[in-house]
Amino acid sequence: MLRRLLRQVTGLAATLFAASFVIFAAVYAAPGDPAVFLAGGRDKLTPEKLAAVREQYHLDEPLVVQYGRWLWDCLHGDLGRSFKYTDQVADLLLSRLPTTLGLVAYATVLFVVLGVGAGILAAVRGGWADRTVVGVTTLAASVPHFVAAIGLVSLFGVRLGWFPVTGDGNGFGGTVHHLTLPALSMALGALAVISRVTRQSMLDAAAADHVETARASGVPEREVIRRHVLRNALGPIVTMCGLVTAGMLAGTVVVETAFGLSGIGSLLVNAINTHDFPVAQAVLLLMVAGYIVVTNLVDVVHPLLDPRVRAVRSAA
Image 1: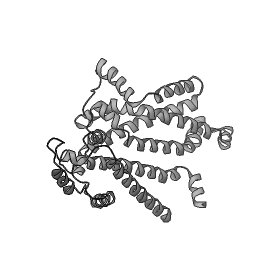
Image 2: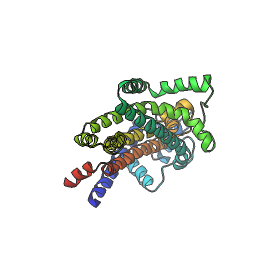
Image 3: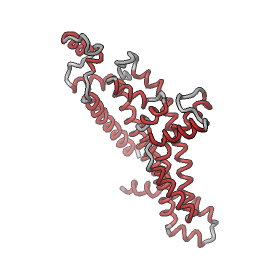
Image 4: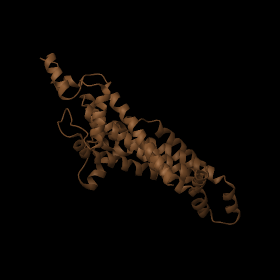
């Protein structure tokens, strides 16, 4: 167990290291010169002033040297200073991160409760319930986030006036009220995926021999579903829920922009538009780190839910 944990931590560190270099290099390979932006634009820009700016911000050094300097500062908790806001990047992230985490958490609750519930209903009831769930989830999966956002804003925000269409809200109740439409627009596609995975996992688990044996022994159907079908189907369901949640951490850009939320997704868009490289690098690194951490947690939890996986890994 200790060796497996050490391997996971080592793999996590190596993945983060490789991802950090790719992010750093990709941002600097983007069109535009950050030195021109830092110098105040091209108006009355002289070669001497441009060279001075490059030297001040170490932009005249080789890419590998710049990356090493940036990585060393990141390891010591210094993510740099924003070119645009002149604030510490860490402070900007801390001020925006709660909105994004709240949005992702709200969307996760929605797609887990509704998606798993719909999948169980389709697998257990069959017939018209199965066809309805499959049809509705197919439609939901085909709608992009920005189209769903526009439709929800038009119906529930403008026509009915039930929910606000911009802002983060104040307090727990106000935040939930403001984040309902953004979270629902994010959860629609995920809901379709989770319901399909739940439905198929339940059907596969229900086809096992021990389930037929339990039914033949007179075990009530409710207990058969709960103890023998749903329990054995939890592994793939939890794994997919974790993967979808991890993907949402990097998929809030469109929704935050559409609803005017002050999260890290909108911060990333502004940073790219203004060539604010320190902010863009920090946000991308945070998104990648969040995805890697969540997927590793899913890998750890999966054997706890399914003893068969634990037995296979122990034998290996």
